[in-house]
Amino acid sequence: MNVRGRRLAIFLPVVVTVVLAAVIGALVVVQDQRQSSQVSEAEAVGNAYLDDVSAFRARVVKTINASKASDPGRLRVLLDRSVAKPPTLASASSYGMEHSQAYGQALRTRDTLLPPYRRLSSVLRRADIALDFIAAARKALGLRATDYVSGLITSSGPVRDSLIPAFVAARDEFARARVPKGQDDLAAQVTAALQYVIDQATTLADMLDRFQSFSFSYSEKFQAAIDAVDGYATQVKGDVAEAINAVSDAG
Image 1 (cartoon, rainbow, N blue to C red):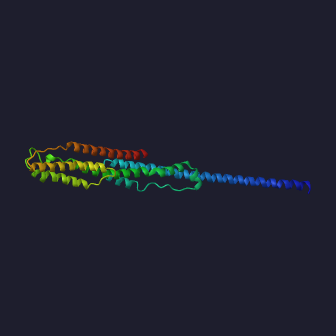
Image 2 (image 1 turned 180 degrees about the vertical axis):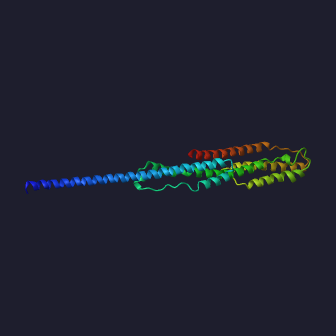
Image 3 (image 1 turned 135 degrees about the vertical axis):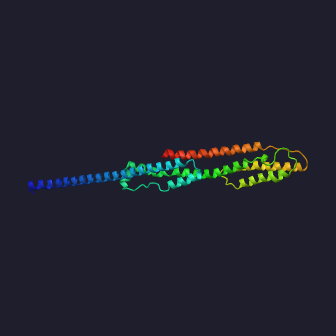
């Protein structure tokens, strides 16, 4: 092979190498552009979802603020209705979703969006039951013996015919109230206060039949039960306010 042939043999591999390098470089550029486009697409999808979430939260907070003075049962219905169709996060390319900051934030937001509303709904459900129980307890504890007998009692008739039946009816009506979870002791305290009057009034009637004197006071037991019911009512109100604030703060 002459000198010119050897030079050509050397030059051709170099040219081929340069061409391959150029092709690979072009492919890298195309790949970078494609990946950048995928990330941009995922960014747009993520940001659109975050905007939808902001609007969604604002609507829910508006509904809550407009109705939080309502009873918990009604507020729960309105809340559940308003969060029934949360925003949906659209998908994007795998590379874009993996490398987009906005999409990553959107994923985290999606996972934490509904739990505060579900917690509030659960708190409102418990509060609805609790307030019915509290109302029943207060009604029972609002009973007064002097509404049925007063002054000097000379016979057992009014005690047996009016006083005792009234407190028995109140006790039995309260027993039909649904007891909130964890409030069995409170229910028992209210029942015990009512039963105490029934028992003492029965003793009073028996003593009157024997022409013997007898008196009793039930104010201490009733007041203790009333204070316990009021304390529970305060607790329920605080739980609802805390759950509402958690949702409002998230919005």
